Image (cartoon, rainbow, N blue to C red; front, side):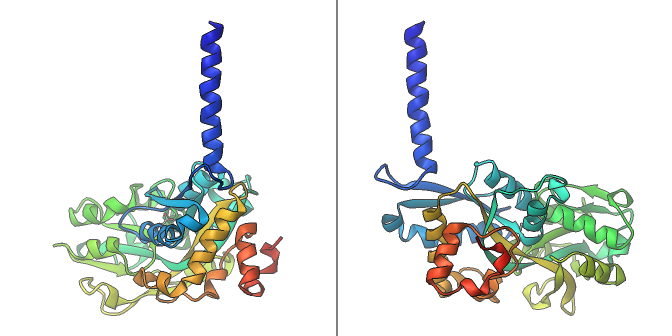
Length: 336
Ligand code: GLU
């Protein structure tokens, strides 16, 4: 019995060491594996995780880091997975980062002090897509309709609820579905839902898929006095437009007007500085190449990638921003 116990203890100690090696500073014990949580495969987070890992993996010899990407339920899932140590990095909407840090929405009364920001990425628009046949031309037309408001764990779930509230509605006023964004285009094209919300960068494969089928669809404007009130009340929302030219098969004749947030890269205070430093450095030093990896990055500048964060900046990222002379572009409240 004692022998068995000893063996079990040894095995778990070795496993513990290997695990610690994976989480700790890179050394001679092989590469450090880091995983970036993204979103559904047809969104922009998934290729964004790929773009970031490509940058750092190109220097894996130098840094001893191997990055990989995981498709997940989105922002809220990613923030929670980073905080509990299941993922080293996650992509998350700027509004969700703000809510986690300040104890709001899914984190109501439970501020997440270990969350750290690395940089901001592309703008994301709250996108409402509806079949033309449904007659939905404004948010108020959603009443009684079958609408996907987003899966639990997604960023868009709270955005959909905010938009409904701006029109005096709740999810009880619609037939709300909560499925992943990746399934929404086919549900719309099969006539099983009338509309869906997706907070996402443009252009993207999901909306192209939704607009390319037999059923004609339109991108619905999200505008009105309730939206103006939302913009005034919640600091993380900004006006946004979705160019009609991105989706030539949609019924829109002009650009759609809506509100939006930003995608950001987050991590935990427990992730080692050298790992965060490496990722930050490779993305910024290869900025032009990074920017060429997705059309949703067209508007990126090094300056706007340092805006829109609300968690403290991870010290590994701070080290790079200091070295690169970018530190003055960051809100000093977020610096150590
Ligand atoms: N904004 C979405 C979310 O947080 C994901 C969008 C994407 O995958 O590009 O869930």
